Structures are given as C-alpha cells and as structure tokens.
Image 1 (tube, rainbow, N blue to C red):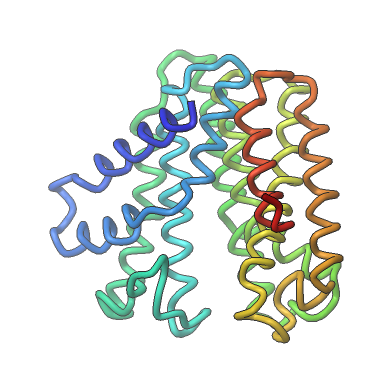
Image 2 (cartoon, rainbow, N blue to C red):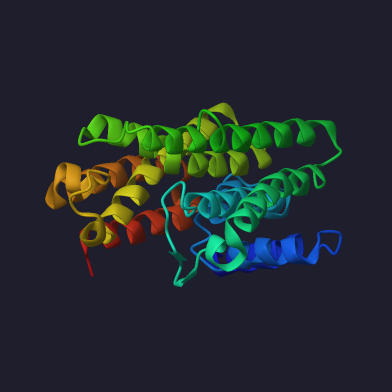
Length: 280
C-alpha cells in the first residue's frame, strides 16, 4: 500500500501546481520545490492513519497534499539567507538560488495559501464528514502555525536552542514534530476516528516525530557536530541512539490496539530506527 499512497500523493501534488490561473513564473517556482521529491513522510502518515482507522484514503488525500505543500513552503523559507542560509536542498540549488530571495519568499507564501485553498475546495458537503474535515484542517493549521512549526523555528532563531536537552526536545517537538502530529491527526479525523483511536494516533505521531528528528540528526552529525543544534552534539551518539530506541518503543506501543492494521506505520518506525542505529 505504500506505493499506492505515494503515487496518489505525487499525482495530486502535480495537479495542484498545474493551475493555469497561477502566473507562469510563480507556478514554476512553486513546482520546483513541491515536486522536487523527498520522502513524502507527512502525507504518507496522513493517508496511512486514515486507512488504519477504516476510512477512505480519498477523503484524506487533499489534507495529505495540503500538509506537504505547507512542508515545502517551510523548507523554502528555512533555506533563505535570513534563516538557515542553505544554498542546496535535496541535491539541487535552493529556491532562492534559482528564483532570487523575493521569488523564493513568494513561492513559499503561495504554497502556504494554496494548501488551504486546495483543502477547502475539496471539503465534503455531508455535515458529519464536514465537521471531521474541519477538525482535520484545524489540526493542520495548529501544527503549522504560531504554536507549532513556526514556533519551533522562532525559538531556534531566538537563540533558545543551546546545549540543553530539554530545550532541544521542545524546539524539535514544535519545528519538526508538530506537522507530523497534525498529519496523523488529520488522517484520523478524516476517517471519523473515535477519541481513544485519536489519542493513540497522537502518541504514535509525537513519538515517531521525535524518532525521525533524532535519526536525521544522527545522519547529519558529521556536518553539524559541535554547533549545539542536534541530538548528537548535545547528548552524544550512543545516548542519541538510546533515545531513538526509546521513542521507537513508545511509537510501537501506541499502535498495539490497531494490530496488523498498523503494519505500514510499524514498518516506517522500524526503517527509521534502523537508520538511526545503523542497523542492517
């Protein structure tokens, strides 16, 4: 099912930025970042959570794509000289290197607003499903905004990110984890999940988001060692791996009530943990 999730997302994302009503130059800069590949982690989690709860993944597809557009906008802005000042993203020149700083800002702005237009234009009309869809969109807005992803970036830029593990966890829980949690919640809401199911999904997503960030820090540790901005430089490599195993266990435990329906998400946990711990 993993390939089916990915194919559905890729097809829908391409359609989302093919709107001829968008000026050609802006459409090109949006597509440059949105269609540049990547893991599509967040939309896959959204669709997998919906599927796991017995929902129709078609009902969650617009939400999944909206989350990925928001993620793409955040990467464009993160790479800007006034933020992380990165010239490359996924082996290609960053958006501001291709389209200039102003063009990159506009591409990010457009993707953020287009994400919500895309989701809203595909909202169901039936009142019960619409209520759940609105709850899903509220989760996405919260995960992306001033108490979620943007809050994490703000904390990092303010200098709050130092060599204190508690601060490090808070920043990454917001900057990375919040949108992952939002994606999972959106899938759960789209499926009409019950309170206990949604709570289990929330615990899974928070634990998996932390695991994903730790694994990413381990893979980047050589490049960033000593700057105080990742789990390896703060905790040390072996402690970071131990923390990754702890988060993986919590993610697995949260999925126990779903048994084999959680197989895709469990496989995702195992793959991420193998990367973090350099396991075969």
